[in-house]
Image (cartoon, rainbow, N blue to C red; front, side):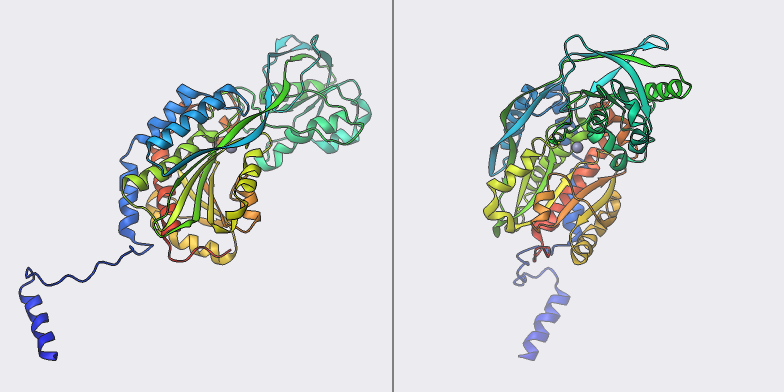
Length: 460
Ligand SMILES: [Zn+2]
């Protein structure tokens, strides 16, 4: 026997071309197979498809405020695209969403000198009475100053002009400023746009009214950083600043729209789901290129590339384009209800919503073992700059899944410039670098492949 083996080995060595029975190919490629990841990266980087698709979304569909007609057109467009990509299942899952409309709006500074005041009503704000509101402006830096000078607020328009301290901190004035001012009798609320940018238009975003009794609802809008700064200087100098504003904003009855959901069904564990997502709604200004159109195109591209490369992973890859992230997150809530029976079979939930800039890595919501496993998977993504993994926030829409125990993965980008465009008329296709679209698509496709192909699911 030993001699026969020796002979076969010898023949094998001497005659490498001889037709020996080949050893069976491993049925599944090893999950961290650098070769497959490399193949994915090369394929995606060479493909202009997501860039062209983003341009089409921005130029043909346009901004996608939830409740709007454009959003309906966007949903129909995405369904058709995903079907054309050959997804196994494409569904529009109904969600009742708020329908807020901006209406006509305009403002002017009347004193100390007259000029137009570009403004953007905040999402959810009521409008002004038809004749508008004219009042003296009280400028404060923060909530503490408002409280300290509360007796001056009655009958005034309160302007919050806080310094930019990053989005997470500064955004509180946009969300809660109107209530704080209304408690002290203010008739309207203005905020310095939530941005570090001092060039360009105002930035909108959602605000909320409290249900607390005795707090009237007052109109709220954002103004440019320059105008807020000037009004503060004038106010501190003791000059009365007078502003007149007209806002036609109103909340119409809720309408039925949808989360768009598409599955590339897994070859071995079809019931286990790796979710990849972005939010499909945007604000009504600009065309929602960075926030969050590009991410939706990236999520679609992940499944399309796997299909194109004939890499059907072990588990199901599910693309979700969320509705109503910007206003009230009804899309995320509806998904949890519609998929209650399979939440525990979600292996990971990825969301991309930090602008489409150069890849920066991943923010993982899970325990230290999960973070370490994702960090290991991300090693071959170093060529894209997408290998940095830290524990942290995964995304607004995947948050309910995360809270139910599903590991969350936030796609991060080098987004120092994001808030120059965010929620403003400047968030348009021309601000997106096509190479960044491709690099992010490559990073997301590779990581989703590894998550969907791994022998064991991430711990939860
Ligand atoms: Zn967003």
